[in-house]
Image 1 (tube, rainbow, N blue to C red):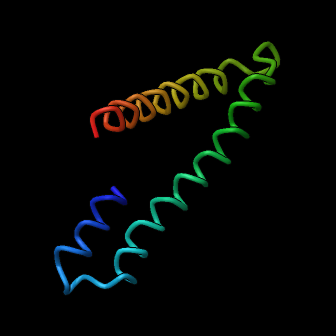
Image 2: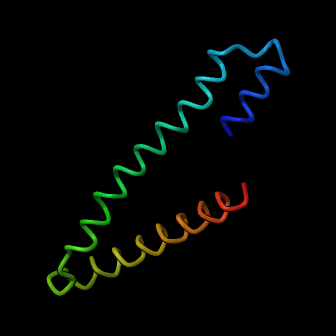
Length: 82
């Protein structure tokens, strides 16, 4: 992605360095935020005692974890194909 933007900068003189930076820096910051939140979430998931979670809450948790898993899988597939 960043390499594509750099090539675009050299190929298209109308593209400013500021535009390329803003387009690439947002994705980098998002990735850093996801990494930070993922580390926290992974620790929380590892440490939760599901025996102490009421049945309805556990059901909702499992649904949300499944949704999260699906989102992660989609992004992993896209990332592997870029």
